[in-house]
Image 1: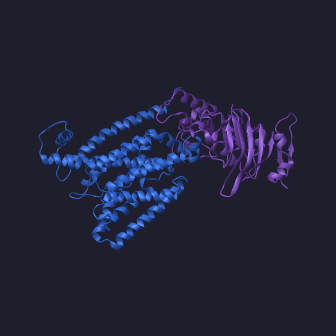
Image 2 (image 1 turned 120 degrees about the horizontal axis):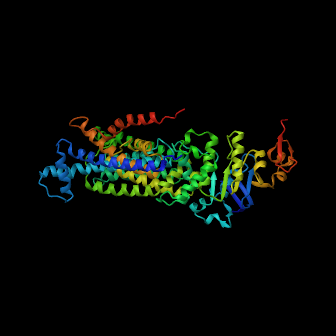
Image 3 (image 1 turned 180 degrees about the vertical axis):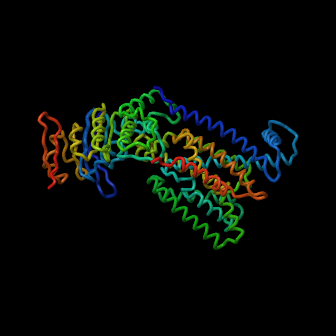
Length: 254
Length: 346
C-alpha cells in the first residue's frame, strides 16, 4: 500500500508548521521522519494519517484521496500509534487490543471469529498472549507500548504510523519495538528522535526542518556530518560499516 | 491450556445483574407504593396495579386504588427512571470527559435549572403560565448552551469543557443567590432550597410519560454509540484514529445527556450523587466496556433511587427527608468502600 502526499501545508493561526511537503512511500517500506524539536514531525504524521486536515495539498493512500474517505473506512486501512497514550480506566490488555477492532464492527454486532483471530494474532505478534488478562495499569512502559502496537495491528491496517514509539523506553525495548515494526509486512512511517535507531531500522529517512523536507534518501546518503551540523547543530563522526550495514553516528562532546 | 474467556463471563455477569436488579426493582417499587402515611398491603397494591392496567376488576376501596395508582406508583416509577437516567448520564460524561469525577451536573445543568426555578418561584416570571418545571428546564438548557459556546461546541477537549462547566455553574449559582437574597423572603428561600435537594412529591403520570420517552430514547442512542465511547479510553485523538467521528459523537452525546439531565432536574430537582456513584459501582461489577456498562448503570441507578425514595420517607416519621440528602448519606459510605477496594496496588 503506497502513501503519497503532495504540497501539504498546515498551520495554526498565522504560524505555518508544515509547509509544502511532498513525499511518497512505497508498499512495505519503513520510512523514518527525523528532525529537531518543533520541525513538524508529529504534525506531518497526523496529516498523513488523516487525523488533521491540511489547509492545502492532498494525501493519497493507494491512490485514494483520504479527504474523501470516511473516518471509519480509513481506520480499516490506517493505524496510528501515539507516543505513550495513557488512561485511568481499569482495562485489561485484551480490552485494549479489542479496541483495535472498532472500525470493523458495526454498532451492535457481536464478536466475530475474524475479530477474535485478529486480536489473537496481534497479541501473539507482540508476545503478550499470556498476559492478556493483566490490568493495563500494572504494565511497564515498554509493555504498554507493545500493547498499543498490538491494538494497531488488530485494526488489520495496511499502513501504520508511529509517533516516537520508543520514547521513555530502555534501549532493549527501543530496539525490540523497532525491529518488530520493521519486520511487519506493512508500510510504516515512524517519527523518531534517535538518529542511530533511525539509521538501523528505516529503509529510507526524511529530514524535516522548519516544516520543510530538506533531505530524503537511504540512511547512508542522508546522515552526513554536514547535515547533522546544519540541522541538529551537533558535531559528529559517522562510520559506515564495511559490509554495508547502517551508518553509526558518534556525537562529539566538545 | 484453556483459559476462561473474559468476554463470556462479563456478559454472563451482566445478564445476572440485570435479572437480579429487575427482581429487586419490582419488589422495591411495590414496597415504595405500599408504605406511607396510609399504609396499604402488598396484595392490595398488586390488585390496584392490575386494575389500573385494566387487567382485573378487583373490588378494593376506591381510596386505596387512587393512592396506589394515581399517587404512589407514578412516583416510584419516576424515581426509577430518574435514577436510570442520571446514572446513564454520569457514565457517558465520565467516558467523554475522561474524568472519574464527572457527573450529570458537571456541565452546569443543575445550576442553570435552579436559576430558572428561582425566576419562577421568586420573581414570578411567566406569571403563573410558566410552571416551575418549564422554568427549570429553560434554565438548564441555557446553562448547557453557555457551556457549549464556551467550549466551541464541546470540541476543544475534556478539560476545556469541564472548565466551561465550572464557569457556567458559578455564574448561575451566583444569579440564583442574588435573586434569592435581594428579592426572596425566608419561606421562598426555603422552598428553593428544598426543591434543589430534590423531591418526588407531586410527580404524576404525565411526568412519567415524558420521562420514559426521554430516558428510553437516551438509552437507545447511547447504546448505539457504546462502541465509540469505548474508543475514547485513550483520548480523543486515539478515538479518531480508531475511526470514530469524534466531534459529532461528542456533540450528540453531550446533547443527549443535557436533555436527560434537564428533564430530570426540572421534574424532581437536582438529586446529586447518583450519577457519580452508580457508574463506579457498575464498572466494578461488569467492567469498563460501555455496551455492558450502560445497561448496568441504568438498572442499578433505578434500584438505587427507588430505595433512596423509600428511605427518605421512613427515616424520620411523619416527615420527608430531601432525596438528595439520602442519596449522599447512603452513597458516600458505599463510594468509600469502592474507592478503598479499587485503590491502586502499589
